[in-house]
Structure formats: C-alpha cells, structure tokens
Image 1 (cartoon, rainbow, N blue to C red):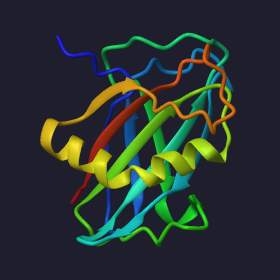
Image 2: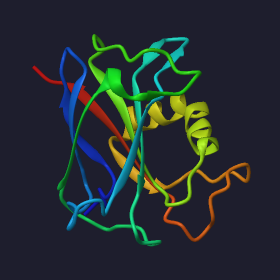
Image 3: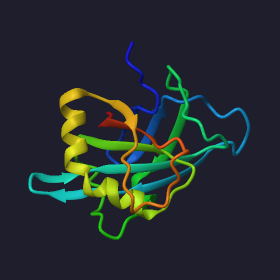
Length: 160
C-alpha cells in the first residue's frame, strides 16, 4: 500500500472557499497543531499555477504515519497570507497544488525554496499523482535536521 501520509483531498469552489482533508490524525486536543497558510500561486510560461502552501507544526519531532484523511482544514483563498512574489489565486482555474509541509522549525527560506520548485512539483504530481516524501533540504534554511521535514503534495480540484 502506498503511504499517503501528508497528502490531501478535497475541493475549492468558484469563490475560492476550500475544504481540504489531510492524511494526518485529527487533533486530540485544542491547539495541538499549528498551521500557517500561504498563497504561493505562480505565473509560469504556461499560465498561473494556483498553489496553497501549508506550514504545519506539532509537538513532536517525529514524522506522522497515517492512512486516512482525518484532519480537516477550511479556508478562503483570498484570506491566505501571500508571499510577496506570488500572484493572486485564480478561482477560475480547475485545480490547485496543495503543499503540506511538516517541519517544527521553519522560516521563509523554506517557503521560498518550494516556490522556486513549483513547476517541477506540479509536473511530478500531474504525472505521478498525489504523494508524500522527505522535504526539500537546502542549507540556506535554518531548519534543524532532526525535525520531520516531510511534505505532502496534492492536486485539489474545483468542486461544483
């Protein structure tokens, strides 16, 4: 069985309202998890790729292993924090790349690194489907090596 930990499923509507279920356990107690959501949408040679980047923290330095989509997130795309280099989220597009990054030690260099790889990530997910793997590691980040640094990459489609 393929490990789907950190991947997501869900949809967004024509108004940019999203309902996303991530393959991690639901919170056992309030504030066990911390998430920061960013618009990393990017204008490319083939058009805009909608991207939502979720930085996730919890109280453990270990990666999660899970097999069902128990953690629900609801948000409005127009309320996301927007990276200064990102373009507006295009609610007309039929799909969005959702990047779920689990790392307890995080700064904007991680987000910048993922933004620089958007086209490659999008192509891999389009060709091979939703997937999770070890996070990109770059020495310019301040993240420690013993943090989880796991990432789920998923395409989320527009619902009816």
